[in-house]
Image (cartoon, rainbow, N blue to C red; front, side, top):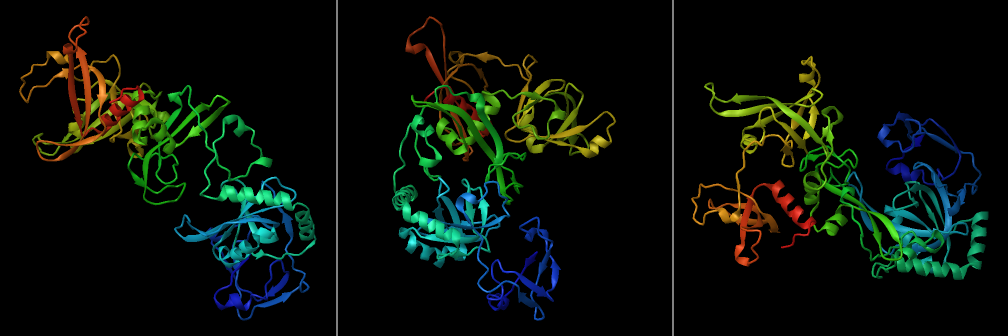
Length: 539
């Protein structure tokens, strides 16, 4: 059970309550303790207070309350996060300056890392000293570090952040002069191992020095690194190539902008992340890429994450996301019942079975809303509601009685409509800027295209003339901005295509160029750029 001291009680009970002491306590008020304040699930859900009538009687003999120190090697690697340990070790390193760290709750804390070792471990262990301990106590240790002293820490917890380490708690105390049989044995070992410990201390200082260059090694040397000849914080550079990149191993998904956890929210939508508990994060494209790298000495399988993939492919995460979900990796088809939340990297194949128009005027004028009902091969239905600002975009794209492959759309079960429908479940599907609606191959196209070659376009045309042009893409400009005739700035992407009048012509005069600018269509812009870069089409 937890006890709590407030204000002046802290100094008043400082000498009355000693770490590891045994006491008989009477007349102490007991109150319920909310679950969020319980750090250990084995604790009772109560807290003990200390009032004026509280009586504290020590049962331990004076001077007998010594910490039950463990050596570094005796701390179990499988300990729970709420287990606490008293640890001794030989001091090797103290971080020169305390760092400021912001917690998930927004509180600012200071921390300094300390490294200790003993005779039973091959790896020094990091101890994190927080807030008050990162001040004077750490300064005292820093003044003693060159003499390799044996120091003690009480109330440490196990942490798995950046490997196995120990972190301080509210119960942690630092003792620069611990006593006990284990301390005497460790001091004896330090006296016999001065040279070994001095070399280890020198290596730690080099690894921890931010001004030291990161060494370059080959894969063969890297694989020969073992715990006995490598420090936990060592970093290396590799000069490698990816001999056979497999683009099917690109995993592009929508995730939290803060922690990267996968989410079902649409791209650009703001939400509260359940994983990192941060409020106001955005759903944005995140990328992982698994590949095998080689440098001639060996091979290694690695995983590149979002920041590294943008460097590898020279593309933004958004472009890679559009590339995977539209051009290169054809997403597998799924039935509606197999999906929940977002269609993600999957495609729904469904047929338009009904279109209902809702007009704003009684006489049938002013189309305000269109309800389109789809049905898949199992008879499961889903509906989308196209409002006034969406009707123009999808007009002519979705036709009656045609089948479509739909991807990157959010899906949600309509509980009310399902309860009123005896034929089965009904889902609502929500289109967004990343949604792709494509007629099934082999079906009649929504609009008959009359393709012409570039050379067939008259040199004098009227502004209202329109042409469906066929050609080979040879140039894609980066995203740029242009000013339209209506004096407003719009996003544009310039694509250059070519064709030839005759297959036997080899003179330059018979090559014709045509520039096409895509306005506003963010999805098209990203796809064209991604297509050009991935397939080696260079400006």
